[in-house]
Image (cartoon, rainbow, N blue to C red; front, top):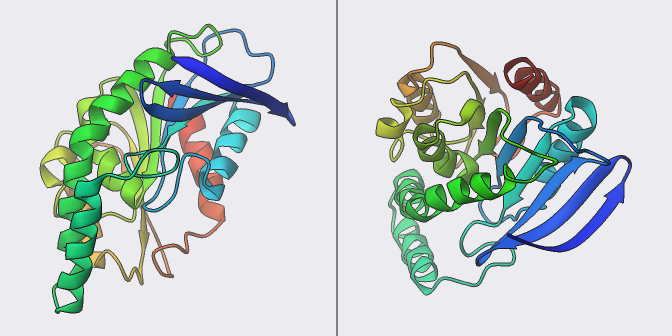
Length: 243
C-alpha cells in the first residue's frame, strides 16, 4: 500500500493511495491514532471513489461517528484504465436495448462479471487498511447502491468482517444466491419509480436477504433520487451496529 497524497480539512484527514494497481482514498478523523470502525463504500456506475455522494457520506461518517472510510475505483472507472472487454459489452448491451431487450438483465450480467474481480480486490483493501495504526482491525460496514449494490452483495456475502451493510437500487437477477448468504443487519433502499431496476426485482432481492434484521426504505422518485434524509438514517444505522 503506497500513499501518494494527504490533506486535512474540517477535522477530516484524506489520504490517496494505491494498492497494486487499485487507486483508493482513505478518510479518517484528523489526529486519529487508535482502532476504529471502518466503512467500505462502493460507488455507482460511471462514478468514482470521490463522487459527490460518496464524499459527502464519508465526511459525515468521519466527523459525526469517528469512523474511518475507504473507497476505491472499480475497474474501468475513475483513475483506472479502460477495459476493452467492458467497453465491448457496453456497446453490445446498448445495441440490445435499442433492439428491444430489457435493460435490467443486461446490467445484472455485467455486474456479476465485474464482481468476480472486485470482491477479492476489496478484501485485499480491507487487509491493507486494517493494518494501519490509525484504523486497526475494528468492526467493518459496507455502503453501496446501484453498481455499489450489485458488487456489494457478493462482497458482503463473502467477507465475514462486515457486520452491517446499506444496500439498494439493485435487483435480484445476479444476486439471489449471494443474498441468501448475507445474515448481517441490512438497510435496503428502493426508489419506487426506478427506471433502471424494476421495483419487483429490488423487492425480491430484499426478500432474498437471509438477515434476521433488515429494513426496507422505499421512497418515491427515480433511480438517482434518494432523498437526503436517508443519509441521516444511514448514520444512525452504522452508529448502532458498528459503535
